Image 1 (tube, protein in one colour):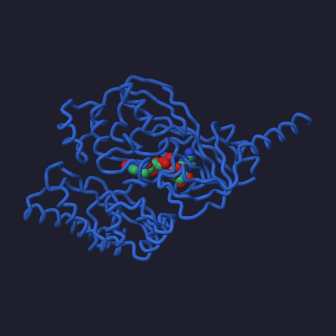
Image 2 (cartoon, helix red, strand yellow):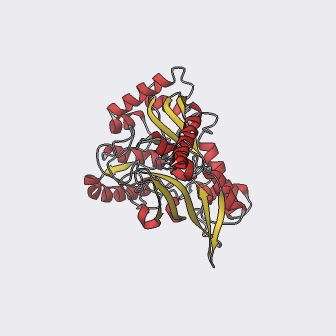
Image 3 (spheres, protein in one colour):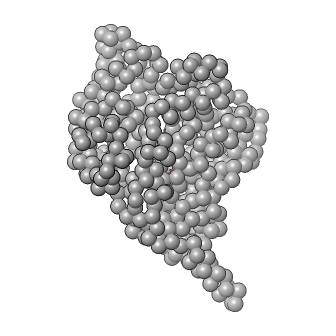
Length: 389
Ligand SMILES: Cc1cc2nc3c(=O)[nH]c(=O)nc-3n(C[C@H](O)[C@H](O)[C@H](O)COP(=O)(O)OP(=O)(O)OC[C@H]3O[C@@H](n4cnc5c(N)ncnc54)[C@H](O)[C@@H]3O)c2cc1C
């Protein structure tokens, strides 16, 4: 009896010591937005997480990783739990693969570098994506033709209500285009604790996407996971500002999506558009290689599936000259067919196209942005044009 009371008091004391009230999140989101969390705690282990959850008596939290995929438009009137579970370890090896387990609080790029330094292949194209390991399965992060699901093995997550750790296999996660079960069915129910990845001993290079081949040629050091990683780092650094220096939420969107009900009609029109473009201009795109269904999502203001289910059309660059001009025409094609542009992946969008697709929501975003950044410190010239400021 005495010990259980003592245990309770100790846990409450620890919670009290680790609990911050009205805590600034400015340093915890890559937009550097000054928003205040009503309550804020950091946890370093699953045990600490459990203690915090039990002591708080709450069931709803905002779990924070690197803060690179959240837009805080106002103060957060709840409890923020900052995941800082660390550790990267090789846990298993077989003939073709090495299995690496990483704590959810590890920085994603540090994990990528851990693999590259040990000649473990599969994540080189995902270099320099901001954020932490724990958030990577949430939206099945992807870049340059590779997605998290290609290297994912399993993960452990803590169920907030049942107070249990559950293992999720690849199929349990239901990965899709920037989708997983954690964004839908199990939204806000689990805290991801660690992720185990299956890396290849023999690399299968993927250099066809974006400008990787061009950059590899420029580097002149041949093709390896190290040079691909370097090429991706160079391309990303030249395209996007470092969020540490200029607040932003990156280019995590992909190409425009088309309303599901229009897709069957738009697809043949897209092929005809590509053919005509080739015949008249001479530029050939690699045809659609993948189409994802993106489920209706009203959680985020600028979600591209806000008005209903959408499907992607994803033309792929051949890395030949003429890609930017093709994208300009392609944006117009999508806009004319009810497409919703996915902001900043395509730097050639026009204000008219964005306004047509997002309407009132674009104005709301503009107002929120101005309110949080009256001096326009975070406003790039691209967004200045798109917002008409
Ligand atoms: C400059 C820039 C470039 C980017 N480029 C890309 C890109 O190429 N491809 C891409 O896919 N994304 C990209 N992104 C988006 C971002 O990097 C990813 O979404 C990343 O996975 C977010 O990680 P985070 O740790 O910062 O998540 P946070 O912003 O902290 O959280 C995002 C969401 O996940 C939840 N969450 C976080 N950790 C956990 C956890 N352990 N358990 C449960 N829920 C959790 C949060 O509650 C929140 O809902 C980019 C962002 C920036 C700023």
